[in-house]
Image (cartoon, rainbow, N blue to C red; front, top):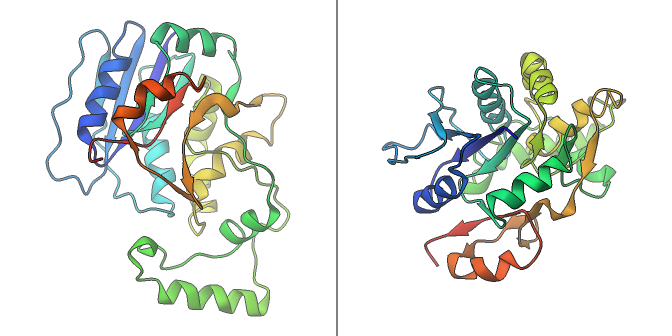
Length: 262
């Protein structure tokens, strides 16, 4: 099988090098998008895989449409060198918990399907994150979000919504999709960015929601074993590298979010 591994990286470059070395194999191409805020790009090399550093860099801000833009930029870059059986979107803090042979076998059994970890339906989450207008949300994590909160309260007071008739499907934004799905998302890039530009964490919704409109073309398969991640409420917790061998026994395909700092 031919795999395109699409990596979004902004820190933890030691983990990134480990990730790339573990994916470095014949039949794999690796694409890396570095956040525009990264001033000095790390040196990363491969022996068997082709490695592409995506020249168009996005200033990625958590929760904003910039996350979707970075993903679509990676899909777009990889499509220029396709076809691939799968386009795998991972972060720079992912590590595979299986050997490359086991990974290949797993995806062979899911060929021609869109492999995602689908979240339990929560209408309230979609209503808040997608149907509300999120303005001035580029610095939510820094705490500078007073204007964002005020605008949300005004919308709640007056019952302001958009995209009321649309159905949304939530997944992890880390996913594995087919050639056909990648082509569809990139072909509709402008419309997707327009539609989700005022969302909060729209990267959790856009791919599955847009592909689910065409069940005859795209088959979304829910794979809970796709990703191991630990949460504190909605925030993923860091995992020390010394737990790697322990997590290999869990049966998951990928693990996140590894760090060298603890």
